[in-house]
Amino acid sequence: MDNKILIDPSEDRINIAKKVSKLALPIIFSNLLYTVETSVSLILVSGISSTAVAGVGYSNSMLWFIYSLMALSYTGTSVLVAQRVGAGKDPSPAFLWGLILAFLIALPLTFFGTDITTAIMMQFGASKEVAEVSHQYLEPIFLFITVGFIIEVFYAAYNGYGDTKTPFKIGFFMSLIDVVFSYLLIYGKFGLPRLEVAGAGWGIVLSEIYGLLAYLYLYIAHRRPFPVRLDVGKDVLLKILRIGSPTALERAITSLSFNIFVGMIARFGDKALAAHQVGLRVESVSFMVGFGFMIASTIVSGQNFGAGNYKGLQRGISTIAHLTALIMGLAGVFLLLFPREFSYLFVKDPEVVDLAVYYLVIVALSQPQMAYASVYSGALKGMGKTYIPLMINISSFWLFRIIPSYVFLKLFPSPIVPWVFMSVETTLRALIFYLAYRRIISKLTSPTIKELPAP
Image (cartoon, rainbow, N blue to C red):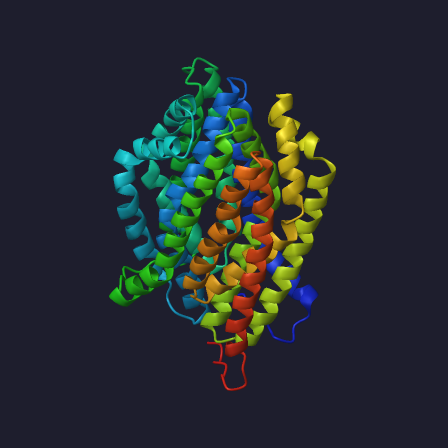
């Protein structure tokens, strides 16, 4: 199979970096396209009001919580496909179970997702006005949430197989459709109804319908990325649940915790919340680089782990980690130098921009640490050790971010306080992930552990 990404332990790091970059760049560009989508949504609705910006931004944060449920089938599919490819086995069962689980998880959300999400937002401190805007935006998205969940499984299967270019090509047209139709429907252009904030939601829906049709066409007409056999072995389902459940739980609790964290900022008013959302959008360019290499590290780790190539796994992950830290460190420099200019791309309110500048300067200092945390987390997931990121992410978020923020906000009531602890927590989490990864990889590469021959 020419799609295997197996690393020779003696391979030159530059060659490894080139090999991994070919894998990671389409993922990075795919996620940057998603960032452009959400950013354009904020820019478009900014013409309505700052409340619309806060509502759409907060809704997207809450959608991370909802999509954490998808991690059960997404992570299980991606990791098992990668491991089975590395071991020379048919990846079909992992893909089919991923689709089944995604549909079953998404179906109830179609009916109850919007009301539950906006109710949680209000509990976390969002104003009634922000919640009403969010309801308009989320209603069409949840109506077609099953489509979004199923697309994620296709995406996971392609990535696990080692084909990251095809999802990027599909994602490009999805982003284009989203941006064009969001603009047309928000402002009612060319005879279409003026839906305002709801138009941004319908733009996402139309793009996802296209994405699903594109993936179905590739599988039915071209059998890509691999031929699918109707094999749904019970053992594969159990493995998906064992691998995916910790990640789903991790993302659900982390996302919920993140929204509790955002709620601390929301209590300082809509402008502080808008500044936080603007800062997130600017920082997301750097974050998506880390996210792309994290997925690449999961693929490299999964395939080499499946092949029993543990020393190659170690060298590959080490190279990915340092490369990602270098790139995100450079991104941090730009955030330090041009925070105001970046902020003005999303909002013109001077008070919101001033607050967003504080956010960007603070988080710029923790970009390399975020890189290391992302890559080592991805490596552990690729090995199937998904329970470790579960424990690290949850404990780190609460011990080093939420609790200190809560305590110090009583002494210094300012949104700057939680932003500072956000950067501190990222640094400590990176260190803990490195120590956990080193402990696991040292056992695997110990002389007493014999490497399995690659199939």
